[in-house]
Length: 150
Image 1 (spheres, rainbow, N blue to C red):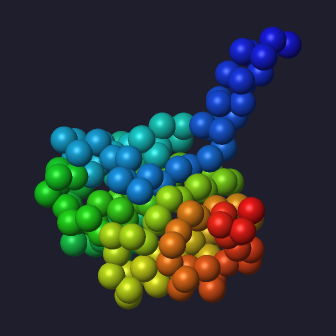
Image 2: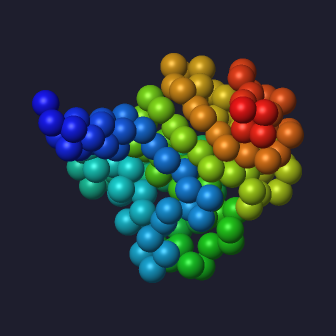
């Protein structure tokens, strides 16, 4: 197998089995919440009504029951957009979640709620890797790697 083909297969594998939460959210700002959440449902075979219910359920799970599916991402606060990004990953349901400064835009109470959600997801046999400067997050981790000490 050529190196190029191996690299392409590695990228495909990572795209398939992982969900990545960007520090800047990785959402389509000019689209609505529903369209962004649809990206997490790409590989699911279900009808429009089922998708709509899944989207509303996941928004409730991340504490966004007040958000309408038709709302544009640019109308949301930073914390709301971050939780929509997390909801998209939850819908994708990957075994590996990579998160960059996941709680940076959130108040302490919302941060704790999101961390509880991630810990629950970890208990569903997922590997969650978080890059953070927040010591409160470190204290909840099974393993901490300090890059300054490598």
